Amino acid sequence: MPEPSERTSSRFYDAAMAILAEEGYGALKLAELCRRVGVTTGSFYHSFGSWQDFTRQLVQNWRTERTMRAAELARAEVDPAERVDLLLRLGVSLPHSAEAAIRVWAGVDPAVGAIQKSVDRERLAAVTEAFEELTGDPDEASDLARSAFYLVVGFEQATDDHDVAALERFLRTLQERALAQASQSGSRP
Image (tube, rainbow, N blue to C red):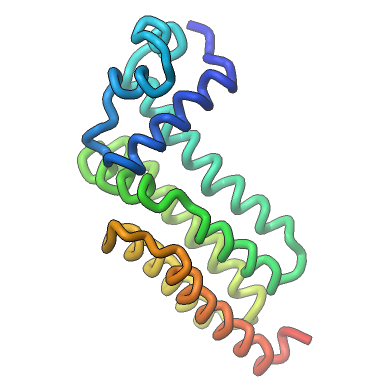
């Protein structure tokens, strides 16, 4: 079976992420997905061989778009303070309700769980690397990165009222701590 076009895939992925964000993992069903995309189930099966094939591609696309590309963007930023700021903005802009639903899904589907674990490791590594380059202190960088990571995951899991402005304020305090550490250690001019 030929792979669906990028545009076709994107329409399905966007609709699936909207379902996850609005209604949670339990609502991600073929009929609702097709209704939102405006296609028949036959059209779906023409694009994706099976529901399992689609869901595998969906979580892989989520990993690629929301983790791997973000890490690439961050690593391309040469200024350590700007890199931390970029990662902070990317973290704030995540589709938090959909991410929370993916974590629920990961708890019941081992394949999704494996991808979720990979995403967590990759995100934590990118943030740790950025904080370490900024502060020059591996232990402090690890503490800051884990704090940011736990803050975002807890934010997604703890509330339906995703107050993104509050999340950003809390993440900015970690950024300020890193900048202060960098100034004290002389790793920042």
